Image 1 (tube, one colour):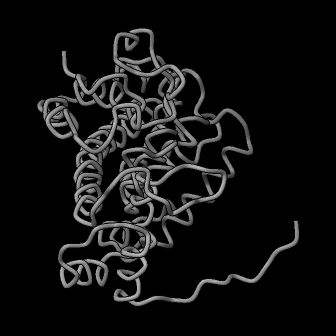
Image 2 (cartoon, one colour):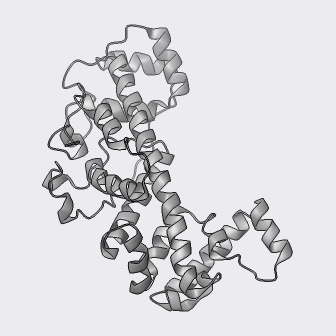
Image 3 (cartoon, one colour):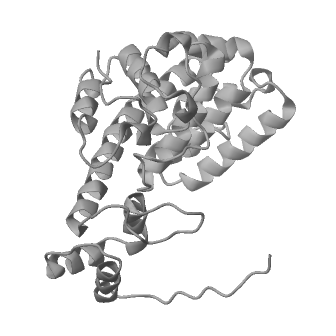
Length: 294
């Protein structure tokens, strides 16, 4: 298939409003809508409008049911609150993961364990992580705790409990996946989960974290990396063919928050947020029902 030039011009908020009206979206307050589109990217908002359209192989821009601009804004705000709710949970899990990983590896292999090839499954993984360490040091060289170490000590790379603070969540996830089985099991025991399951969970949480951090649409997102479901979570109302949706993350977040003793009311707050939502469906999140709290 030959490529064609991109045909769409830039549009002003006023032109965007005219386009929405032409496509059948009711707008009762044009000034408020214009103000909203001034500070919210139309392309981002358009993703939420798509939910209400008739679905064909190519996008139709034809509404399947009547919808107002206020409905669209309400859905965008709901998704924002949902992102913030999952974001807060992931940050608590991330802090625990950093702590446990640094402690478990260093207790066996010493402060500079990340440089030790013995902790990795293969030499290639060791080299990749060394490259990540050097990159992180360069990017964070002006951090006071990094510059303090570099100015005072002869070792080129700080100890693991320092480095773990400047590695990205994705790098820590990859680090865990490349550790020896013994080290993986030591870390996984602190989270009361099988080490193979934890590999899957951390990879999935990396994508979830990035989606939250980068303002991506979340409630009906289809994840490339989604978590393995434990047999212990089979009672949770997940739809079998929709494990790539956000709902499959709820059991793992519930479990990990329970282990680390953080955000005890997170599940109840989530239930209040999604329960009985009048515009969207549980299956959008891969759930068979909104009743997620026993």
